[in-house]
Every structure is written in structure tokens, then in C-alpha cells.
Image (cartoon, rainbow, N blue to C red; front, side, top):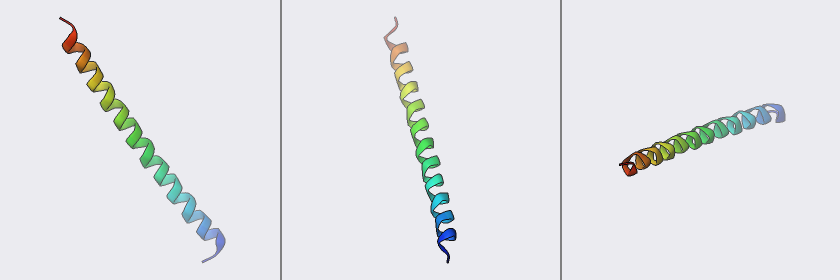
Length: 45
């Protein structure tokens, strides 16, 4: 395996990791927002 192939594989893995982290981040963010909004709605008489 050449250095070039190795570099390509590594770049792909990093990209996939980044994508999955970003997805987790946005999922968590939207969960928090939903929880916050439902908490607000409960407090409004």
C-alpha cells in the first residue's frame, strides 16, 4: 500500500468521523431544544 492510498483512506475515515460527530451534535441540540420548549410550555399557565 502506498502512502497516497494510506492518506486517502485516512482522509475518508476522518471525514466520516466528522460527519457522525456533527450528526450527534445536531441531534443532541434538537433534543435539548425540544425539552426546553416543552418545559416552557408547562410553565405557562
